[in-house]
Image (cartoon, rainbow, N blue to C red; front, top):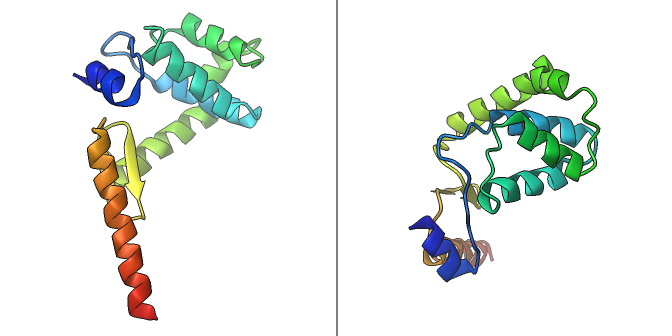
Length: 144
């Protein structure tokens, strides 16, 4: 269903990696990539590896290849993955997500009021944006 929706509504060809993949090692490595100024590039490359290339982003060798693809130094790869500091940052992000009530990905928050969790049809996202726009117009009119 998700793959068909992505193809039909967004023109994306999805070929996701294995079910049950743990993304925690990728999240830890992304924290490292951020310190090297390559966080966004690593994020995109890891997403493509999983969602388009059917790779297991929980596999260390897959992650090493993704890291090298974006120009990260992988000399201390095992130490980076085991880093207490990076693991604590990931844990803090997960705790914050739970505190916000985020239970799935993607999770989008509109205007600090509307939470949309999971892959949703275009029409759902459009309705939320239209509602926010209408509320903003109404809010401005009341203040005038």
